[in-house]
Length: 434
Image (cartoon, rainbow, N blue to C red; front, side, top):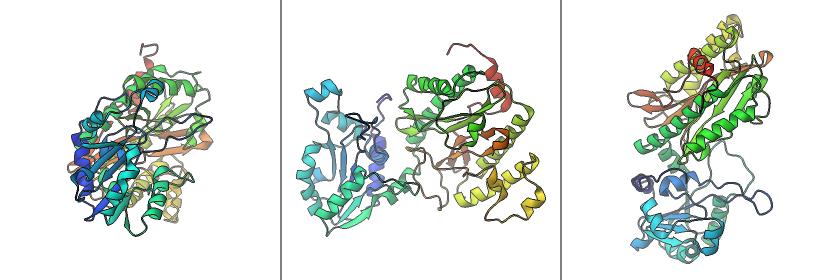
C-alpha cells in the first residue's frame, strides 16, 4: 500500500457495528476479491473487496474474514485467514502480511493461514444456525463473471444445505452509507489530492495538448501524493467528446475554442473522490460557454442546499430537475410554454441533462446505500449536474463531493477552484514548474 497505516480502531468499531445486526448463533464470511486474469500468466492489478477492507483493514489477496460472535470457542468468534508466504513468494511478489502485522492492522487476534480455512470451517458451521453471505447486491451491478463470493456461496450451500442463509449486503449498505469521522478524514485526503491534480492540469492545458497527456498529468499527481491511483477510469473529454457521458478513450487533440470536461478522482486508502470540472482549452471561456457553465454552477449550488437530512434521492432529483428547467429556458434551449405542457414522466430537460445529480460515494465511487430511504447525517454524495449540447460541441458538468451533517451539507471540495473567473486566472499561469 502507498498510504500510511490506518488506526485499527476504525475496523474494530466497524466489526462491532456489523455483528450487532446479526441473528444469534450466526456466522458471517467475507472473501477478498479475485486476482483477475488478464492474458497469459498476467493479472489485472489487485483491488481489495470494499466490504472486507471496511471490516478488517487488510489490503491483500486470498484473505478470508469469519465472524461468529456467539461461538462457544472464543478463538472462533473473530478469525482472519491470510495467504501464507514463503521465500519464493517473497522474491517474486514481495512482502506479505505476517500474522503479527495482520493483528496490528485489523485488531483481530486470531489469525491463521488460508490453507487452514477448510479444516476449521466445519467447527464454525456446526455451532451456527444462520450463515451470512456477502453477494454483490448493488442494484447497478450486472455481470456474467462468477466472482469469488458468488462461487463460495454455491459451494457452501451445497455442502451445508440445512443452514439458514442470510444477506450481509443489506447490513453493509446500511453501515457503509454512514461515514465515521475517520472515514471522512480519509475521503478528505482523497479530495485534497484531487485538488492538487486539477491545479496541475489548469497550469498544463493549452491548445494542441492531447487528452491522454492531461490524464498522465493527473496520474502523476495522484501517485506522488500516495493515492492508490484513480478511483475510476478518468474522463478527459474535449469538444464534442464531452457529450458522451462515459467517454474514456482520452486520445484526441484538445483544440483552441473547445471546452474540456474533466471527470476524475483520486483513490486514497481505498476511499474515492469524484470531481468534475469543465475548462477552456484556450484559458478563456467564450460568452456562450461561460453562460452555460454558470447555469450548471447555479444548479449545483441549488442542489447542494437540498442535500439535507430527511430528503430522499427521488424527491431530490425531481426538485433539481425543476431548477435545471429554468436554466435551460434561460439559455434558449427550452421554451417555457412547452415545458408547461410536457409529460411529467418525460421532462424535456432530460434532452440536455439525462443523468442523475447525485450518488453515494465512499469505498466505491458508486458506493452502496439505499436511495429510497431518507438521507442521514454521515452520508456522502456527489453533486454533478450537467448540460450537454451536441449541436454546439459543448458539454459542461461540474461536480463536488458533499457530506451530510445534522447542521447541513458540507462541501468536501469547497477549496477546489470552481468559479469561471478562478479557473481562467489559474490557466493564465503557464509554464509554471509542477
